[in-house]
Image 1 (cartoon, rainbow, N blue to C red):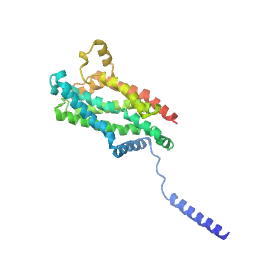
Image 2: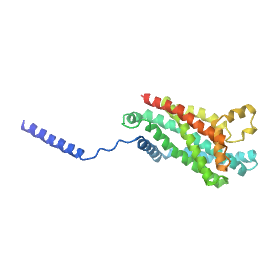
Image 3: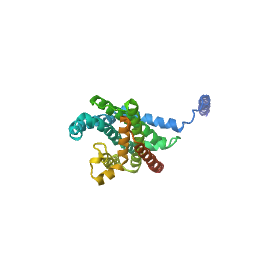
Image 4: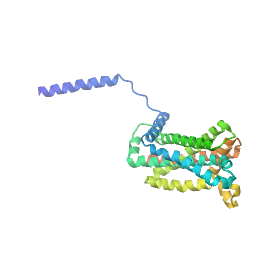
Length: 281
């Protein structure tokens, strides 16, 4: 009886000491939407650090495509590889970055399959920050892919008439469009059951968007019915905008098309994605 009473007294002393120690520390402020989004963005970058193979698609793919199309088809399409490079490089820059946007949905689907999303949903944070943070992290990958492509182009002879400012403006526009397009893949990542399904559906959308555009050749050489399809493709206007900004001859109508497309993508797929995220089990 005496022993039991002594143990209870000791436990009470420990609990009181623990409570006093906790009471002396200030309660940390509640994280806001921006800080939690950047935290999840940093998590996406750490995943790249621990699995560097994820950088293969943003490094090897642009290099391979630029070299192959410039030297295999450049002479036949534009008379010389140098002339073709001035036309082609902004286009392959767009294709390289737009193609890797699908990995946003793949990464989210893998997190769901591992059960990590259930833990995130239980945290007292701004709920969309999980999705927005993943998009922020992928934006860094897009920037890396764009930098590699431009540096390779400059090495091969690409000379943008718009100078450094035009190149930066073109890359900034590409990043804005890629961020907007990524909402489509996040919807696939939340809706589909496996990462292979996400990749398969994403490729079905991306292939006609990129190859049915003005990335490789001028649409003026196409049949009229195909040219009509190409001219309503938002990727065509994105390529024209990036190409125009880099060469100092951008058209206002192309800029309006791109910004309008970004607004529609976010307005439509943003709410759908967040609704699926809220219903995720």
